[in-house]
Length: 287
Image (tube, rainbow, N blue to C red; front, side, top):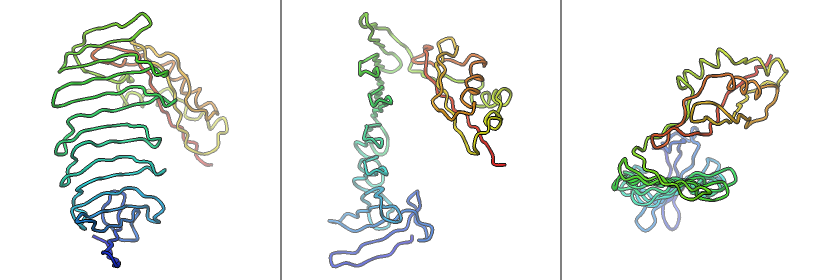
């Protein structure tokens, strides 16, 4: 382990040179600077960017070898907001752990027992910041529940499973519709043949020279096209999420529109319509 010890009047301060995985490396190869010291019998570690302008995490370890986390662990986004926080007990996650995105919206809340998740809740959000859905799984009780919301914040559906048997409630303008479901099976909509089939279809049908022919500047363009896969596999409401121009978005839309039916999404064992965003990359090389 590569580290140095700096003495102060109160206690020793340890300095560590680490890579992105918090593995000890030579100073010249380090991207993270770790600083540690003993506080009331516990060893506290703070990790910064190598020039010390960003705090990445703060944690407690068993001792100065950093071989085992033991105590509160907190990591941070580049903007300084919390990213993840929870407690370790002798190197294993224990109790409540939480994750947030860079806007401080909660993404995950999980309870661990000896490093094993026993109950977890995940959250997803619309672009406007409104909650899209939350899902809770409990492995001890063998339960699963999920609540979905509209962009306006209204509850649109709710499901609760005990084992593989569940009750699905849909909230409509005409009231609540309740139905029984008998499987938790869920699958995303996909192109026939999966990724291999999609690549083969693009090779046969996409014209990669469209941006070149239209004099696009050199570069890599990650085009994103949004559409809905209906229950019968038909594609509707195709639109571009990007606007690079030079015919790129139009070419991908053309290829998707002329293509075969997709395999529809499955939720709780039933086919459902689903939004899909399909990326396609164009590369314009320099002459």
